[in-house]
Image 1 (cartoon, one colour):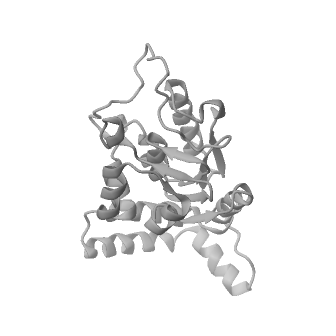
Image 2 (tube, helix red, strand yellow):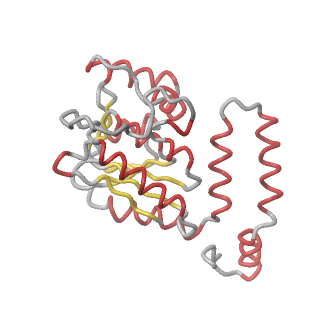
Length: 248
């Protein structure tokens, strides 16, 4: 399990060019580690991410990504899409603009009671950025995504839960402990093969026919039955003991 923190609490974790590069590097390290099954993204201090740092100086060098990406790899946050790890967003405080995009790029979202989400683009004379139209529509449906994006009004944690934007809401006092426990459960009690395959199945589902989805699952199931993790789960069931997916 790897914890990655947006760590500019004095700036409410607003993203600048340096933070952009560091975030990519941290994700690449976690994704490349064989011992990591789950990545947790959270913000230090009182806020998850308040968006782009509009007061930051424009860097001299190119950012390493393209505003109009010519390939998936050139997308600013391609490392979220490329990672086979399960990515959990732990959202406390505000997730605004690009901060909300980061949360939506994650596989699962756990919110503290004080969480607030906003996509304020029309109120800033901007448009929905970084593919958030599709991301948000996939998460909450087109009608609700339209409401969030066209009005640009903030929603609190309970509203976000009702919309399906977050998976769970927990008290601010329990938030850190619960987030760690939630991630630990996935990391310790779930097969790495199963997690990455189900994540790939979910990603491939869009635009697939039902039959194609069944066929993909059939191929993946055949492979799953050959893994040591499946054999371990089978033995654990027979021996009436806890499964151990963390064997070397």
